[in-house]
Image 1 (cartoon, rainbow, N blue to C red):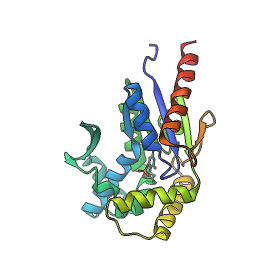
Image 2 (cartoon, helix red, strand yellow):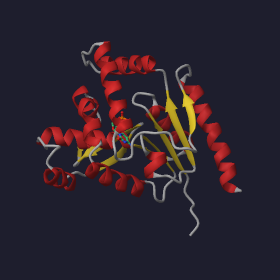
Image 3 (cartoon, rainbow, N blue to C red):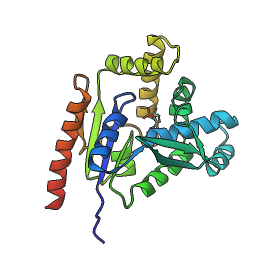
Length: 229
Ligand code: DC
């Protein structure tokens, strides 16, 4: 049967503003938006709360069975629910950020999350952001964007975001966390972060949010035209 939905994959490094662009694009196009990083963060939060040992394969497997993640629209926001509880803020703490790359490198975690993500995008028009969306989750996505930005600018953005939430961190700690996550995300065995061959690069170091949205909307129009051919 012919495919009727349109899938947009947005990948890239940590704190590049992927979710901001993906969310704005989904809103503009009236597509579903899924932040796949939020799913790995929710799993990490669960591991912290339940004291799951990452080295214990059996423990990890049974923990995954007990994890149910849902996205629920709420006014302008999408809440993320972990076993029915709203964890939208709890997954953004530095405690979660410092463990999430290790948890998301686990094969069992990836297999479970990728399957859920594929299900979410199977029949819908969707914008999904993450690290391996264009390479592993939706290798046949209709449009793939790979986002990057100057590391210092990324750290500044992340620092401001955390400070606004009252997290007391130094700029060095933020720089270190980003470098640490980039390293693990791009060197892990299971679907490492890398640019898909057919992805288009968006370096947003010097672009406003409006300019980024304009850029991806333009790409969407072009991709739409060529998929209609
Ligand atoms: O997008 P984010 O920074 O909230 O993602 C948190 C972590 O989740 C990131 O360090 C790596 C992992 N992640 C992943 O491995 N694969 C994805 N598709 C999305 C995120």
